Each structure stands twice: as structure tokens, then as C-alpha cells.
Length: 250
Image (cartoon, rainbow, N blue to C red):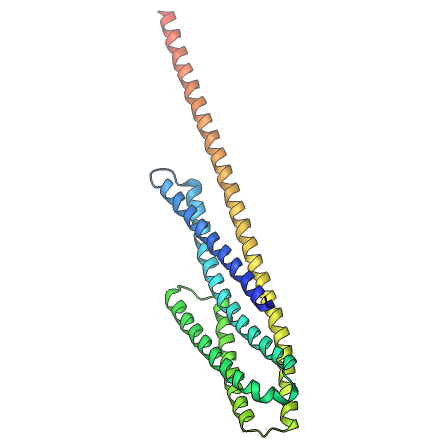
């Protein structure tokens, strides 16, 4: 399996785990809301107040990061394939074989970016607030649009250029630049993955803190019940003692 396929598979697995985590949090929140419908709200109200916004922001952030990671994976796969072609193809056939594939990938990338823009528009319509991830993603799409324009012009120039040693050298230089871009993209993907891991760790800490608070609330409620029971028993004994004294004095 190619490195980018392994990376993509691992990322998909992590996003599935994040989605399951969100589902579990929403289910817990719903159960606590139902259990508090007929009585005291106490810890449940605090749980809802804290977890509700966390779930919403958690979901929005993951959606934006997933879209940006997908965009980065397209660029990474694109540059990886071009570098592999450079290593595998003989010098005399690089230009002829690469032009068709460059054109094909250009169309594929254009379709993907267009689909991503439509999803971003839908996200804007359904979201109450925007966040830093969406701003970064819009900037990334704009940059890809600019790159697309440059690539289209470059492909047209290659098609019109005569088959000379000079054009082959120029194409080799372009491949070297793409190889450097590939390495940079790998670094970006690793950075985004570390952010995802950090976000997941924060979610775990939130859940632990909430469970600990709920446990303390339950302990306080039990102590309160014991105190009230003892208080009632003491008052009953006091009333009984008063009655006994009154009877004895008659």
C-alpha cells in the first residue's frame, strides 16, 4: 500500500472515532436531559451547559479540519504521482507522457475544489458562527485556484514548446519543485493530525472533569439525604421527649 493510502486510511479511522465520540456525547446529553425532566436539574444542568457548546464547536472544527486534510491529501497524492513518474520514466519520454496526465489531474483537481467550495457554501448557510478553520480553508481554496490558473498556462506552454533538451531540463526543474512541495505538504498533514490528536485529548479531559463533577454532586446529594434523615429523626425524638415529660408531670 502506498504511503498516502496508509495516511488516508489512518485519517479516516481517526475521523470515524471522532464521529463516534460526538455521537456518544450527544446521547449522554440526551439521557441526562430526559432523566432531569421530572425533578432536580443540579449537575445535569451544568453538564448540558458545558458539554452543549463543546459538542457543537467540536463538530464544526472536525468538519473544517477534515475538509482541509482532504484538500492536502489531493495535493500530496498529485505531487507524489508526478515525482514517481519522474523517477520511473526515461528522460526522452517525460514530456510526452506527463502532458496528458498533467491535464487529467488538472481536471480532477478542479472538480474536487469545485465540490469543496459547494460544501463550504452549505457549511456557511447552516452554521451560526464562523471559525478560524473555515477562514484557513477558504484561503487554501483561493490559493489552489491561483495555482490552477498557473498550471493551465504552464500545460499550454508545454504543449506548444518544441521537443528540445532545454524543455526537458525545465520540466525536470519543475518536478524538483513539486517534490519539495510534496515534502512541505507532508509536514502540513502531520501538523493537522497533531491538532486532531490534541483536540481528542481535550475532549477526553472534558469528559473526565464532567464525570468527576457528577460524582461529587452525587456524593453531596447522598450526604444531604443522610443529614435530612438524621435531622428528622432528631426532631422526632425531641417531640417524643416533650410528650413524655408532659405526661409525667400530670
